[in-house]
Image 1 (cartoon, rainbow, N blue to C red):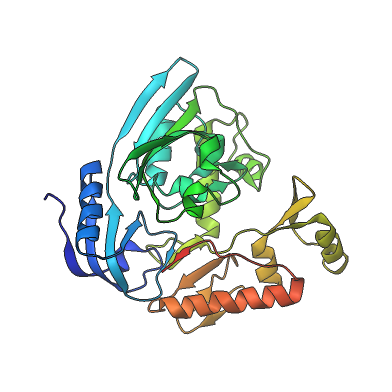
Image 2 (spheres, rainbow, N blue to C red):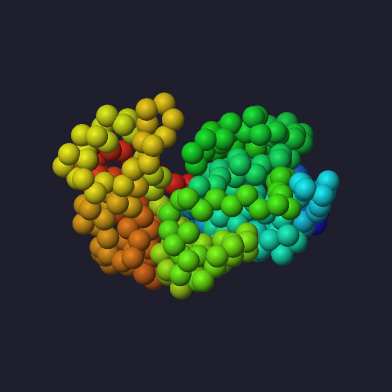
Length: 339
């Protein structure tokens, strides 16, 4: 068996919060065969299998009594190119931001708004990651996943993935599908999305008149670097809460009391409220208790100042949820997967 299984491994290097918990068993998968071996090993030894990528969407609240399998498969392939549209496939273990930069270097547009998002390619469809007006579903061309129930491979198209805001079939059926590789439909002609957030303003500040996809990527990297702490310096999982979808009627009621409430129209009479605005307005921005806190510049980000435990971070998140529900009658949903 080529799969190397180790016992008693600290997961501190493998989660962006930097929480120090121990995995009963740990292995890294560099190929489809390694994945199958891990499934067989877990079944034979009657232990659960927990699959992770970059660990940037995890909150670990205790030692993990399972075989933790980190996806470490790498590779990028151009599948088709008709001169206008390309389809590119990347292995699940590819780090997301370097993959985005690779596509831009090839002259392929479409992923620039998703620059500097942490994590791996395989995790991107799970959450239907999105930023600045673009989501994975907008550039998705398919993926290949392994069915953990049958051991068979299956290809998924856009419709079958059931993408919605920070959600997908793979999140809804967590534990069943193991994403192996993802395909993206990109363009040689730029179709820029500059309407969301301060992207256009940042381009102007940088002296860019006729923006290219690479210019947009640089602007977004600049904005994100200012707003979001580097996990290598300050443990965090990026945006900790989803922006809640609420009825437009409730937003109208809130705006009577809070005229500066930040909310964006959505289909079917819904509006998306900026969760960071709610948390900041409630006074949590910059809050710290021990080594668990809310970032001083971005209220949507919970941080580990050094030695915070998973339960301490979770307790802080629960307190914020309770306060927001009581103040605004809005329920916040946590983004990271919790174990």
